[in-house]
Length: 182
Image 1 (cartoon, rainbow, N blue to C red):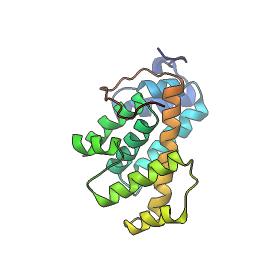
Image 2 (cartoon, rainbow, N blue to C red):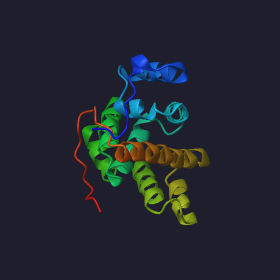
Image 3 (cartoon, helix red, strand yellow):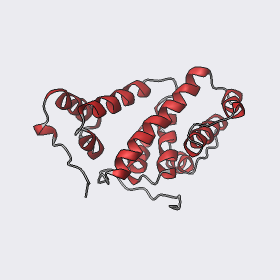
Image 4 (cartoon, rainbow, N blue to C red):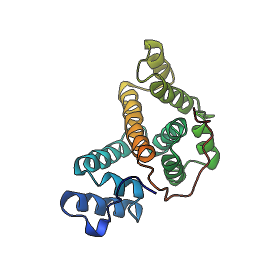
């Protein structure tokens, strides 16, 4: 059970109502995470705006979802792991792609480099070496894509923290976490 009220989209007004209507149009329903975040109009606008901006970014939806499941598994976020596994499949990833990404791996060298980098950003709280960024350049990423990877990490930390801290009920098909909690 959620530790915070899940806002009913039917009762939402003003900007929150508008954002929840857009979210409903995008997903066919309003996922519980957005109902929780809707308690703060500013947080909802920030989260939904970030999803929209990064969804249209250079990395593409499939890689964005692979980053998301790697971070969700690392942060023990059942909600995000379930949601982004489903979204990754819709974006063209195979079940194997998503399972590998969850573990921070990929058979594609560029994707593997991105996942290693994203997890290093999380684990080291952004305190990276020049060689870490150079590894992405060597994998073929340009500066735009490097910044976008970090933005994806930040957005996923935001969603992970919301869902874990507030115990938002998972409303996507469940996926088993692989990481052992500390």
